[in-house]
Length: 308
Image 1 (tube, rainbow, N blue to C red):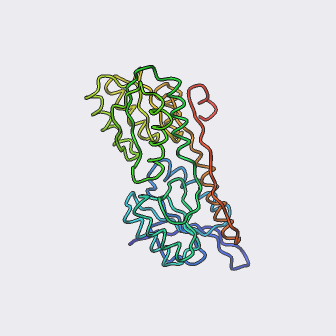
Image 2: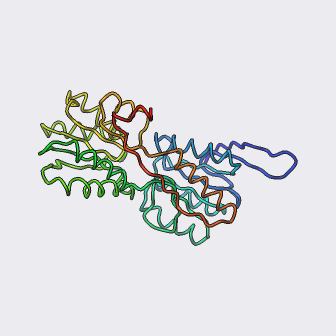
Image 3: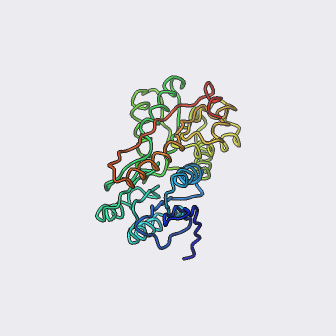
């Protein structure tokens, strides 16, 4: 295994070291924080949240070792086991698979290594959380559609990676807060789009070939929403179709401003990343930190100028 390490911050005159390490793993010690990302190429979780966490960790002088699972849940399990074996002081986890990682989280629990989930939940084990309530995102999408979808509307739903607790909560929340309240609306289909723009394009293209009328596409994140928009535009069927996503990434904000999406739900990457840093600081100080829950915000054409 080839690793790249980059150390930042030598403190003059004392043996205190504050560093930032990037790569696939290494000889972590008892003072290191292990940061395990499901995929650093992912726009929101990997790049935006990861970048904000790195800035926050560096500013606080935290010694962090960074791992990239590249979307491979088995690789992430191996990386987490390595961090545990190296005696990490704490683990910050963006889970590739919220189910299969549970036994490894429990191994960290047995070693009294705190596990902080950032943005993406796991479905078991003892954890601290820096993130948002995914049901709330679904409720905001539901509230918009309750007001704006016509009687007898036909809709489709693109779910995020189904092994992620948050993806299931977004679907269940939308079902309860919208579908259960609008019996006139027909759900044509729902599919797991794996939080992927490419996968969403493929699924949406098939739906467009099957269903002559689609009034709305509800998506568990913005990448899937943007993929749906591409497919709708290619079929010349975007006009009159309401597309909603979650995350408020730059491209989604532009799409809302241009009228190509009707809504995105802002998930605050900066506050989530800072929340994880705050939890780690409290752990370092021997404190008893609690979860950091960041609220979602609905962004539509009416208020998008505030967020662009």
